[in-house]
Image (cartoon, rainbow, N blue to C red; front, side):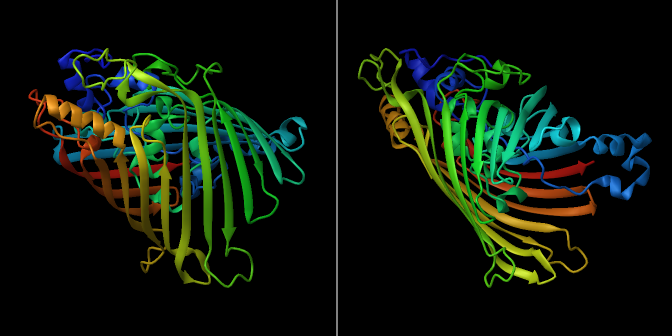
Length: 481
């Protein structure tokens, strides 16, 4: 990941600036990522601990409980799971270059009921780790921000989350502490979970605007979360995390914290709060179920100005010192709605048509992305004879901030013909077919508009051609045990 350093006033380094934003390992991206946000593609939200999933063991009794190990551990309050996700993705047109990749992720999950295990009433423990392998299509072939696969990450074996939780007041209040990923509970949409693009998990606005991408897969960080749920309809969550899961540096954040064992505590904090309201799911409810969420976050570190240097000049000015002005703190607000709009039958309350919309905004002077929106619809249990299959369509739009675009306009005045960043968008169509309980395959199509936000193609040395829109086909297989 070598390249031109962005903090230089030479014309060459200025020319590399906009070309690096959408490419994780191309000129000028890494130092910017170290101080403000990572240009690497975002990745998926981690599965919510405790969420039940079908197991392939139900179809193969011989492996359901080998030598009685699972039942013996369960008697002591310990449960473990193993799942594997494998993706084949190909960039058939557009992007920086054509190509096909295979990437995979093996996950080990351990959950323990500490009351059964050690007499700790209301206590629980969770840990999960990944073995990630293969190469990412977005990183090496397309150059887009919103990665085509939500498991895309640098190859590594890494710890993700490990925490303990204490529940009080009949479970109405819970305090969790340890190494946490904010993406397991915050800014999530249930209906968006069907889709494979990374942005439908941890949205691209937070991945681009927070240091090292924020506390999200594959970079969890020490933190604590409090949750108050006075009833089944209302929940309030507040999380405090170390503000940079990888710390400052010139390497890619995933290389700076390669194994998930840094346990950083000395970075300015990241704080997030979210209110959740569920309706329509209680017995006798007349309407269809849905969930509303509103939230806000703040990071108390310093962030690079997207346009102006410490000397007051545009960073594109050949006379500039090339050092971005440093701005205190960063913020964001967001809202989410998940809504069932059609129920297949009263006997299958979770089958039908669900829609989602999610939007977020952040200040334009210190962020690459200042507005983001996604949405879509999924259809479950609507095909006769295939009650567990699901298919859906979704879109996402990330707008490049006004200040970042102002820098591009200044660059275009020096080098006429350079493209100006404006937005990146993606449309995804997907179908998830269950082969056996615990085993599914999922063909997927994505069309990516303006990869990297309409940045220059780093493989074309003239610097006057933007990365082309990309059409991507993929196939995922998922096995849960």
